[in-house]
Image 1 (cartoon, rainbow, N blue to C red):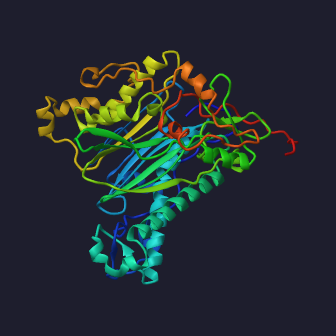
Image 2: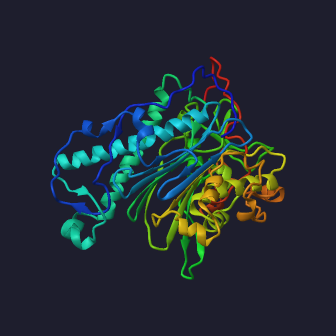
Image 3: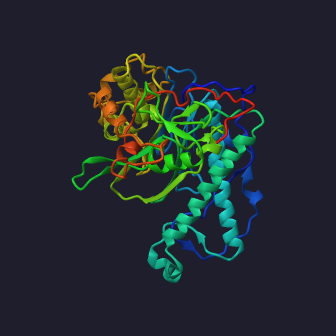
Length: 474
């Protein structure tokens, strides 16, 4: 989120083309049986039918295995969007996503990506499967044991083949999404854009693709059955050495303003604008020639019985709460269905404590419970809660102005996740140099905090670039 100035004249509709029906044949392992060949048109409907898709949740509420909640901050319209889509391709597949918009039309970009990106991912997965079936190759299915695939491992690891398929689908869908935004007739994305953190859980497999500074973590039990936080993604900030090197190579600039030395930004080579506070994003086409990209980071993880839940959230949460605090809040929520709301309310209280003179950022949270279960009436009774309590918990009011339900929610002391002025000063002397001839100088150990810690929340964009007819030469 955040403010900037843009020249868009029109708003956008969140409708697009094409949505494939669920696919039954994408998971770990292989199946050799031949399936009846179907054309791509057999899988496709238009996005106009999205609201009627069962098990697709994108507003405050819950599903069979998750709960989601978003709350507007104090900076204007809520620019965060979120989605949980169960039975995404098959009965055991769930798609989750959080999208944090920025710029004057960031809310439209985030909603557009929320609706269109999972559809594109399905389309490319279906295309990969169709190519495999058409060439008599094995298709991915189920969670078969390695003993079931026999000599298939001789030609390469099953996991490698699976990763290659999903990586290709994520990369192509993100590329197609950015291309659609660029050519959209009614949506100006020149200085507006969105982050994206997207996951697909299928059986014991977790596939992740992400850009920007939204984050995913997992609550898991250690050997002592204590809950621990496992960060699944890296906040793709401009001063990460690899990101800074790419931006500099493309003639972009990375530096922080004097009054916010802890917030590195991306600037045009010929103007101190727009000052984007992330290295990868959808949209933001004024910076796409200067090192900002929409290519996602991709990763695959095999889940275990110790893994309990996954939390996706926008940086409005991570700016004031640490990974460990988030895991504590979610694991101690009185009901699973209220976990996302309680987390957002906790973040709102931390904003008041840590930044009493600042405007609270928008917050969006998705909590996915990996055992596939939500609350039952007996769960409420055991904890002294009724279903009526749950209904009341699904409010959409401003938690920053209300203390409703505060007695039942964890109240955490400040842990100074956001650095103090003294810490900021120390960091300023250790920051990555990207404008000098020395290039990025800090090593992997020095950068560890960059992806894993929150920073003071400011606007994602500073101002609109002022292009003139003549630009300074290189």
